[in-house]
Image 1: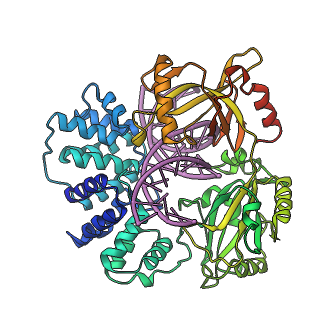
Image 2: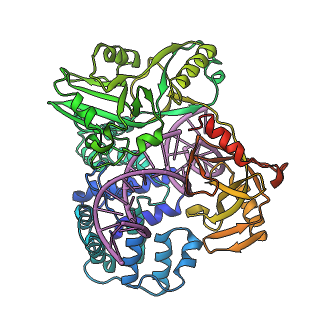
Length: 540
DNA sequence: TGTTCGGCTAG
DNA sequence: ATCGCAT
DNA sequence: ATGCGATATAGCCGAACA
């Protein structure tokens, strides 16, 4: 682990992408070749292989308990935490301060990996204690830097400016295998460790799509207007309804149905009606689509949410039935279709007759802005969010968010809200008040909170506002400040729903700050009635 | 039985 | 989702 | 212009715990 932590320390200090890649490439080539898979995986911030059956189930509270048992948390550690906005960094500082020395045999990456897998399998009574014991077996044997990255790895974010994408680049560099070949192998196998080993053995070309084994999903980018799509040359898009549900990949092979969610988790048992319907289907297929709550009509996402993660879905199966709207066919009877153009995949898809709760996604061709707007309106009428526009010639490029798929959604009206509470940020936002709770007013002028947002402002706006908030604090709660209701922000969002979390009785879905309204006063902000109106209009 | 925690989903 | 940096 | 990394929300469920 020493070498791993040293490498991460160097990465943390360098901004340049090319130096990072160099560092990682030489680290991958050095040391014990038996540990190559773990090196690649741990550098990507994954404690467990993607799609592992059991998660770690280790979080803040358990970590804090374990740390206090080894006396790693001196009184006052919280202020150190606030200074750096990162638990790993805070513990690193505290341990350094007290001259902490590790003792016992050093921890190898192999042992680290084995511990993670063991921790994941621990379940049942007193599992918390047993998980903690497993962590305590390692902690005293780690140096302060190792502890720092050990904790960050558990949280799944190393915060050194390197993610799996750059690890792929480094693998390509280290073993002189072309980057596209590495990317392709990784998307098919979803195992960066295995890909690193194959690169070393020069066998990446053997990576293939395997029915039953999930791979990364193709994602879409957002477009704001129909105008921007048809400005340039003549184009034609396939416009599909954008369903508001959960994305899923269905594999049907050797009589077995497996459904996977976007993070490659197997979710088959949560949707038995989909799995069962495929019994006896005459083709081997891999499908891509969206699982939606559906009862004659498409139901809102909130309904589907009640079915998610249910161990006994039968209880709600009748009340909240689901449909699987399929929009892509990626594999058919022994043949991968990933590199076939979308139009061809779609043609083959339509030729299959899929069983009942599985349906084919609504799709039309659009050639100009008018047709696109028309398709958009119709999609909304069917209860869907908008459109996904696809280039008919495009291959299926998993893991890529490219301009080949574009999503177009409705702009919901915005609300002007006043900021009443602000909280300290984390990581690079440490020391900045970056997280705003805001309110609307009722008819008596009382301020009722309706949401919390952090994105949408530039760094300099946040910096500027931080000093303003410091000067206009009403109360310091440690985690942040209650502030004078003077800063008005225009908030955009994707939906509004009833909620007990906020005093207004509503919560916004995906709120983000559009701009600061310097021209408005608190008397002029949006009212509870405004929120109710948007709610009634079907803001969901 | 109610509460806390961890993890998952969406954009 | 958004911003900002690196290339 | 593009790719990548960093920043975080609300709601819901189940499992473990008190």
